[in-house]
Image 1 (cartoon, one colour):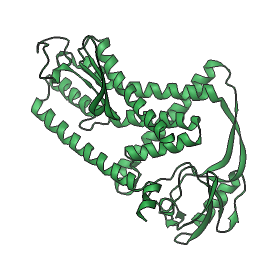
Image 2 (cartoon, rainbow, N blue to C red; image 1 turned 120 degrees about the vertical axis):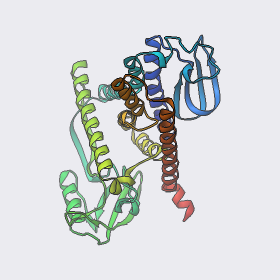
Image 3 (cartoon, helix red, strand yellow; image 1 turned 60 degrees about the vertical axis):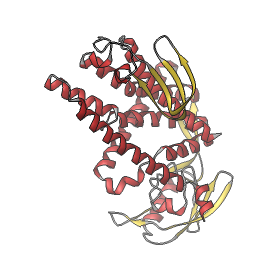
Image 4 (cartoon, rainbow, N blue to C red; image 1 turned 60 degrees about the horizontal axis):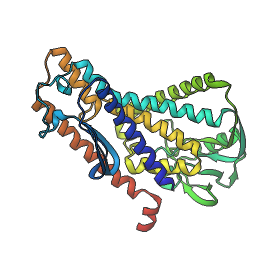
Length: 363
């Protein structure tokens, strides 16, 4: 069920993104002839007055279709309500609306999460150190079998107490034992596992295993003091996630050789979402907000076949006073689409082979 919940979240985020494009076009009176969730064969279809609404077989995707690109369309080519015949600003609004919709949705999800769970005011610590995230499956932690959500109870025979002191003990032990085997007792759900990790040497000469660390325990909440506090705290959390995501993309681009292993495809994202859903609904809401912000930032990058690539063409058109030749746009977009499809297939294969149950089958 947790996997289905994660897939449902991703499908919902795609609906939100495409709905942004669709509503921005219809709001301006621009013709839209298709609104599809998913790719591949049509499972369900409804023909409206102008637009065909469809659900397709593969839910991790979607598109809004315009009659500009439909050779069977009966709308005259000089119709002022065709997307390509609208001013640059009108088209820019339509193209950027998907990104804006994802950002607004992320903020609303955070508001729902804070409004329903309350405001964190403290922490009820328990023994051990939680691992919120494993940076990469190729990191020492990933190779050792450590997973997000694990709780490290002891390291090298030393039990870890509760609170911040446990984090410092774990951190110092790892830093002092670069390239040395360390035995771990890990709590994963209702199971205790014995794992061995070998910290690698970082740039500072200290050992590292490639994980985030957090105190183990349950947060304590209080009820929010009205809608104003909910909206304010949601904005602060949204800003924090947004800035952190931008910093992550900057590190990924500036140190691609070292950080490429952190890229996740659809399978990896679903696995992370399933883990969040398995823990509780609050984590699933935060997962939805984080992925929605990531989806917005990725789409606004000036890369071919993404919204940012189309906005880049519009910027060039606005500066030179006429559109970029169609054959150039098509060539760039097709090349970009092939690259993204190839990258997606690679990430799907890589992430699938790294799933725990797949690895067990191949041992």
